[in-house]
Length: 288
Ligand code: NAD
Image (tube, rainbow, N blue to C red; front, side, top):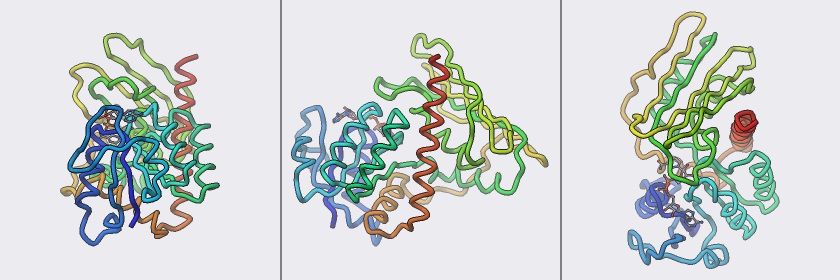
């Protein structure tokens, strides 16, 4: 059994507690036991679980793992505190708001001999699995991914980081990318539109648009032109296979139990760091 604490009691934090209280039967997630949560607000108990202080969370010996579910800007400090205390960390994406810091934290995790896991539920969705299957074996000529959604609350950071799940889709579908141009339209009245121009290894252009504003429906539009056909809609998928956060928790638990191979761990780390590096480049170009 590994004792765990949840830091940040928002949507994601609440789901983490729920999932630990009712893990998928027979899955490695049953090996996690929630011992408390940390919140800046005075909450007392939540779903029958007690609030504890950050100091207790990092020092208690019956806590071996932390779920970092706060706003993006405070991920870094929280991850560092738990890694330094020798605890495993599962952080909701994006891990940090800078590539350099993510590299440092990964080095720290290695030095301490603990797991650092970044949740990527967008790769576990049926939509993504269907899209990946459809794209496999096709030769991309050019493409675009346009995300729209409502405004984000403060603390979620630059759109290239808060929207890293869209970038991760592109990297998982088409391999490592290079940023050639990026722009952020004036952010007025909670509206923002970031456009990033990317190139695949075969020099095929991809455009990623991240647009947020009041009243904008949450959704993704794709337009992928292949040598043989075009794809303008995410293919229909068969129903879900259970909760996405639960699937991620099982993956994290497998890592804690040493059930994930070195190659897979390395592949994941390379992808995560590559996406964070791209996000940072996009931010730098936009802010020049
Ligand atoms: P949210 O705003 O609902 O929750 C964030 C919570 O963290 C708030 O309750 C806030 O008070 C708390 N918090 C912030 N700083 C804190 C600190 N220093 N100590 C303790 N508590 C603190 O946001 P959310 O949707 O739950 O997102 C949280 C994280 O999960 C983000 O990194 C987000 O990118 C990621 N994520 C969320 C979803 C989702 O479906 N909601 C999906 C994937 C990833």
